[in-house]
Amino acid sequence: MRIYLIGAGVIGRYHAEAIRKLPAGEPVELKAADPNVQALAAFTETFPEAKSYSDARSMLAEPAREDDIVIVGTPPFTHFELSRMALESGRHVLCEKPLVMNGQEAKVLLETAKRHNRMLGCCSDRFLGLCKTEEIKSMLHSQTLGEVYKVTFVYRNQRARAGVEYQKESKWFLDRAKSAGGILMDWGPYDFTVLNDLLQPESIEVAAAWTSKPVTQADPADTTYDVEGHVGAMLKYCLAGGKSVWVQYERASCTHGEPYHHVELEGTLGAVKWSPYFETDQIDYKRDKEGQVETTENLMAHNGPFTVMDHPIYYFYLKVKGLDSQATINEQAVFNFQCLQAIYDCAESGTPQTVPHSVL
Ligand SMILES: NC(=O)c1ccc[n+]([C@@H]2O[C@H](COP(=O)([O-])OP(=O)(O)OC[C@H]3O[C@@H](n4cnc5c(N)ncnc54)[C@H](O)[C@@H]3O)[C@@H](O)[C@H]2O)c1
Image 1 (cartoon, rainbow, N blue to C red):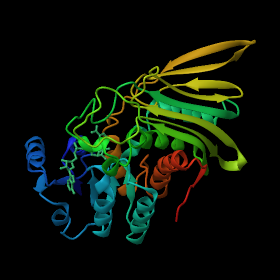
Image 2 (image 1 turned 30 degrees about the vertical axis):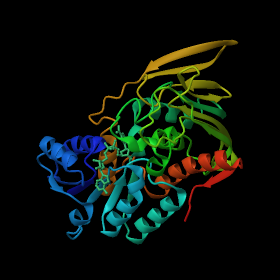
Image 3 (image 1 turned 180 degrees about the vertical axis):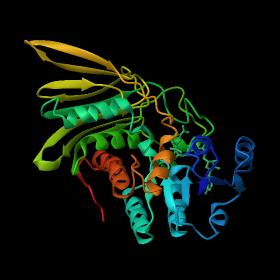
């Protein structure tokens, strides 16, 4: 099969590493396009198996085959045009997060994918399928926690701004016209992909939301820096059967307040706390025993051959091959993105927003 990579930057390298690990049932031909000569040269030095191109359009000019995959690994402001072009070339598209710049672009991309009978995937599924989060999912299915009425999803870092504290050369992270937003567009895609996979909402209401941009002496003066560093929202997840759960959401890449993370589900019979990301593989389950709180700690490390950085292309590859996988595609990929857009819309307008599951 053939995999076409658009963008040979930091994430492009992770995808190329992952492609080397794909099941060796057939050889994978890798092609990569990037107009940045240095980036492309550095990429092909590490991945000499890749055929290189200076622009994506000429790379995609050859006739498409049924299982061709295009990975869009460029900055967000280019995702829409590049993904649309790739879908129109007759190929499945796996796009980096955030999927696009706004809700309208997401809708048009989904329409384009449908019209060409191709799949549109989003790399925000990177953290799906981890043993610890699958365990939480099975606790939900078995009603171990009783009626779940509240979810807390809070990640607060004091100084972790993409483009300031790490990856300094990629200034686009700080410019909303290029990145679509700050910490909500950087980590929110993962947060809502995990939350939506867990809770399977039929729709979501953003009841209240806010954003802020805390100021520090490390703020760069030599580049546009207009993205939020701190965001919060209260969301009502409307579930099947008329049930609902409140989700308290907060993300900070920059705050002068306390740094901590807290991800917990609370139900009428118990509560469970864990980290869906890197911090810990420990699951803390609390319930009542004879009027006292009993805590059970369970360690659930992820031992699969594929790392979280490998997951997006691995899951998408399986999906394209017609196999079961955790790939986040089409309506679900767009729904996950619309949650982010709705938080910005609510914060900016002060008006509650509803996110229906299907936009078409
Ligand atoms: N860096 C990370 O750790 C990371 C992790 C997960 C996801 N992502 C996502 O991956 C995407 C890219 O981020 P990055 O960190 O790799 O950025 P980067 O700045 O390191 O690389 C982006 C590359 O895209 C190239 N590019 C720009 N326009 C192009 C075009 N029209 N055609 C082909 N190439 C083009 C640039 O020349 C550059 O080499 C973003 O959406 C980001 O959110 C990044």
